[in-house]
Length: 83
Length: 424
Image (cartoon, rainbow over the protein chains, first blue to last red):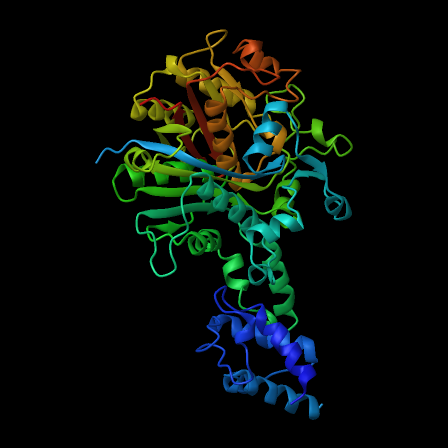
């Protein structure tokens, strides 16, 4: 896992955390909705931010599989390596 | 139920002041918020001036979280959220706790078009086949009820949360809708108000109708001239005003500061018959609206100390003053003071009623009648109806007790409300 990519992703996610969830609650196994309490509507925005930050495009299937932080990192790694 | 309804909170985001203190100072001193707008010149508008609240980065960070600001491109939503949140805090009311809404508090916050800039941004993306890039907030920024929904989330309101829309009467109509709800015992507190976006996409249609002044682009502060012989059209404006209405019982129980009482009012329409049309009022309907407001409020025409008119600075101002004379049965030196706040903020369209209601109420709580900037050359037809001193050019410390306020809008719709200094 690239620590650089993880850091970028963490910074993206932090914006969408509810006020009562601290940034240090984000770990690579965190579930976006169940653990980080992120509003499901905002997952769409996280995907757009990820696309912009890494210059990749995520498909609907990728979004469906993106449940946890490590899911997202896996998808990012795959998209970048197949560029 | 027959609850008395009082005003316990005010909030304002106006072209000449954001926040009550700044706004009240500007209204008292006749400070205009109308400026030259380079973007209108670039787009070849005839009228290149407008009233727009000076919202800064620091305002945005004070009222919105970084998440709320992401992709935010709806100026009316920003103005409405600032005014609405401020009014609630000014009333000393808390945000509802995390797990339980405040079932007794509701919101009626109107608008005309919301999020025009966001809608444009979305349309451009859609037309390029980029639907998936719109993000999650495109819907709530452009739905009309986005503003009441947004405020509902901030305050945690559990009563009715809705948005009314009736062109330039929107804000005044909202006051009466909230009043009715509290009076009927259906809510204890209602945040009422309205907001209107800024920008070329909102104002262009009016420019194209040639009802905006085109000869004051180099003198913006002189352009909005209600009741003047040289009135040349209305200056477009924007912003938001908000009032917390509350049952007297609720206000007393929590020891709230009371700005004024809402005695009642009327909304009606001229049906686009007679002198009425889509864009012009039926005079008989205006007279009936004012007359009915007096009757339902139990107020005599002789008790009115000040009128805050709609008075947009078009050729219709003299007709409006004539209608006030007929409805009140008063004229000459017996006429109440009359003013239009549009000389300082422009015509804030859907936000006009609420911004002007806030200012009308401030006149009661501050003991003043605000002056009419740019009225030095009173229209001769108005001068023939009422004495010059009843159209004050500068703010007067005359402590009005009862103020009547009317707003009229496209579609030949009218709203008239009466406020009185609170007396237990």
